Image (cartoon, rainbow, N blue to C red):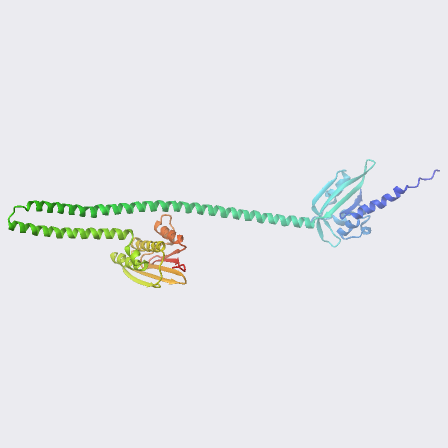
Length: 401
């Protein structure tokens, strides 16, 4: 009987190389036969599931490490994709399951199972697996980050839409305010033109008629008796007195029109005198009582453009009281405090709801606020139905002022 051929050196070295290959990888690798029993496992695989290699050899690996789902429910061996590899001869790759450790804990795993085929027969399967806990944590962190970014983007888009809507509304208000300003300017021009025509025009026509009358009388004076001449002179003196009164009326009308356009006090005596004069004149003409309080340093003077803006805002405050408040008494306080000018107008009128001062057609309030904002100021309005309204202008003062 012929003796068996002894293995060659290469054949003797093959198992050693295979063991070295299995132990050099960080992935877990084990093999099973057609019954599911472990035929080999490397150190990395045994360490990942908490066993020593010799403790799992021959044991059913599904019962050792793949017996349950992540929620603890039973995982039937018939459903196990690993066993499908040798039952159907089809490889698989899974990353949505868990392997269980010896201590009863589990970890998310990615594994692949490939059939072992020898001479056309499936002899078992080789399973390669890796702990993907860190990968899953990174993925979850990335998912949370993406969700946060998506939420932040939604908030940003919402803010952009809100700001765009606010800007659009503000633009509409600015356009309406500009249109109202143009209309008010045109109405003021019409009023001034009517006053000039009706008052100054009629006065000048009367003066012209009187001058023509004097001219005719002077022409008729020649050749008359002294008695007639004396009577004519008396008529001329009377006519001259009437003309003098007409001229005084014309001067008063001119002064009034000029004052309406821009009070001369504002240029000659300053803002405080102009505010004092306007408050007393305006409220006296409206038959309202005035409590006037002025407490500003004597040396304080605002630049011309700021003084004009403050005066116009004050005019509009009193004009609103006259048009809407139905008040009997108005209190005006003008003072300075910590580098800020405070101008406060309070009335005891009927008051109004807050929405009245923010309405789109509250052009007077809108104009006052825009004037104040242009110079860094602020206009606050508070009102209570049946109690009255308070308008408070805060105006920043520079060092030069």
